[in-house]
Image (cartoon, rainbow, N blue to C red; front, side):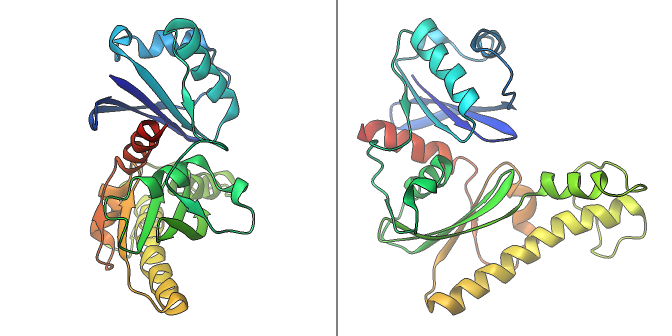
Amino acid sequence: MILLFDVGNTNIFIGLADGEKIITTYRINTEPDKTADEYYVQLKPMIAFDKVKGVAISSVVPRVTEALKDIASRMLKLTPLIVGPGVKTGIHIKTDHPREVGADLICDAAGIENKDSITMVIDLGTAIKYIYVKDHTIRGVIIAPGIDISIKALTGHTALLPDIDIEVPKNVLGTNTIHCMQSGVTYGVASQIDGLVERVKKETKETFQVILTGGLAPMIAPLCETPLRVDTELVLKGLLKIYHKN
């Protein structure tokens, strides 16, 4: 079994793979102050650690990276693969500062099955990342606030707006405060996706496939007018491919 960790600022997306296939996934909260021992105790009921033969980590939270690295080396006696400089990914990066491109973006690009097609990956995470991939190369990225961030900004900077659950209201036009806010963050993101995809098409003068990923992708996809497909495991698929390359 290969244990995969995609560490984001809000969640840690965990996958277990048997060879080339991911067989199960989990999500837990990202807690940078948690020790390796605490993470190990939390994960032990989910994961048969005695069957784990390899570990791969994609992370944008250094303190959690160190905790997971400690679990791999101390508890499992394994050297984890950590996506970063010097690791073979199969993805080229054509940006002003390639080292600034996050490991999660690289894994998303590596997870694309048909690499001969031009692809826009839209990752609905803590931040929404639009990753433009052509000829195995990341050629441009758009970063926007994610849905959770948008809700926190609304509730944290207003006196009367309540904290809300992320749900899709029946109508775009709300008639109560909660539905109004839910409409803004769900239909609003869908409209953002539609609008930015069209702008990128005009700028690049190219057509491309669109893949929507991230935990909220199944909720947002039906609201979009843009033809797209959902792959919630894309980042883990990419991380698994990178593991095998190394």
